[in-house]
Length: 137
Image 1 (cartoon, rainbow, N blue to C red):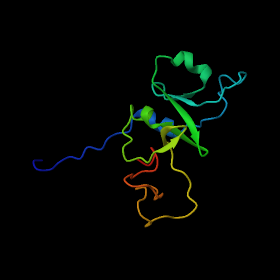
Image 2: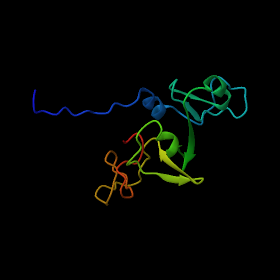
Image 3: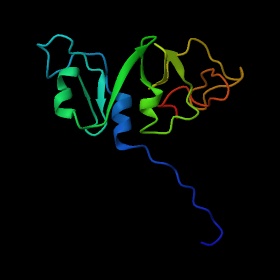
Image 4: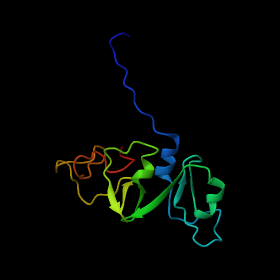
């Protein structure tokens, strides 16, 4: 069909849904007997959440360290940008590093129409951001 442009919708990487749905900061089921066994690393190549004791078997893989900020999961912007486009996702600074939230956060009140807001969940944002989290983008 000549004259019609086909819009190309970028597909999510296969590992991204696992990252967004996994539970972090829980004990590792493989290393229950070890101290410091909380799951806070995501292996992109295996699409799996791991603890520090699992690292050796993933040493040549792409890894993301998940952190906590205001009781929610975040990843350093510089690490996430190597894997996906995080432009227009609002960033925050914690421990002198820019981070992005993985998932949207609950809102105490509806904010629609109060200036700039997330295109997906209507959370209030600073300019020029359009999304509050990686999930919303």
